[in-house]
Length: 262
Length: 199
Image 1 (tube, each protein chain N blue to C red):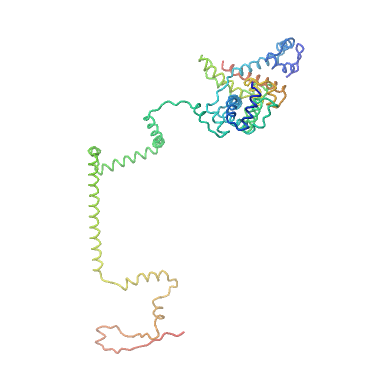
Image 2 (cartoon, rainbow over the protein chains, first blue to last red):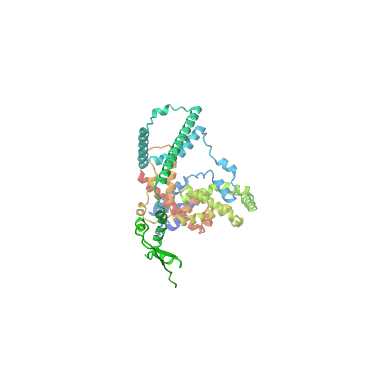
């Protein structure tokens, strides 16, 4: 602020007296000097106007009302006591709601998120396709909406429908069981009628195991034949026994082989 | 403003564990503290939280109050002011206006206060008009620097005398008066400009 001197008062002195002047505590010659300086100084005159305006704006502000539950919250957070009395006085009276509106509000509260999801275009398209598929399915199955109207919902009718449906299911199950038993009997007969091939069939699993475990690629059968024989095992070198053999009367030669001793 | 003996007795009862005395203190001072917080912080939610914090701090440090050193209201206001300053530092509300010497062009970048005024040309009823003006002044107050804001709040809204304000702000009385003058002038200038734009 420039240090001007007007009417015997400097600007910094004016600034110091400003609050007192606005508070109305200045009087006498001091007030006259102050007013004279405000009227003549180009800096302090507008300053006085602004300060006065600002003070008047602030004086126009009224107190704001604290929240109704502030005291209760303070007491709860300090003493830890949730005073029921203060809560009750702070509580705003709620308008009475009928039970029907309450039920509607509860249901809408549950349905609103679902409905919000359904309303999305992608889900709406999916539901549309599902409805279309269902209606086509029902049409093909011969279900007509008009038939549903004829369904009786009396307890006796529902019970009758239940027993009839149960009997139908049991009957179907019995029929299916007879069919399965017949099929099993036929399969058994077929199996008995087939020529037996025990050697080939019995060896098959063992062979498979041997083939699976065989990493040496050695002829297993041959090895068994050579090393599994006992020392006194007699091998008959003979021709094939058959009608021709008997007619030719060839001599039978017996050869004894001994296992190599190691 | 307060009977020193009565308040001293209340405080003693509080320290002794009398919850009714504490409730009386809360009932007496919650409005004042809430208003200081509201005018300083600018929002009702912040003011509510800060008021609760002030009372929590008061409750914990009540035994440190010495009636011989000053009035209870000054002690309460000091706690409030310190918490507000801490809150201001934490939230880093950089909405300071410059001093009275700053040029007008610097303020033109700021959000015009005329946005807070709906329609000055239409003659609304007195209540609505008064509310709009209050909101405008409240918004202008938030544009002051914290030093100027706290000084004018304590003086013009809480009617504290300069000595008490000097105690709360821990500055000399001359500084308090200077800040009050600068704060008022800044506010007057802001609002003058706002209403000139609207008109």
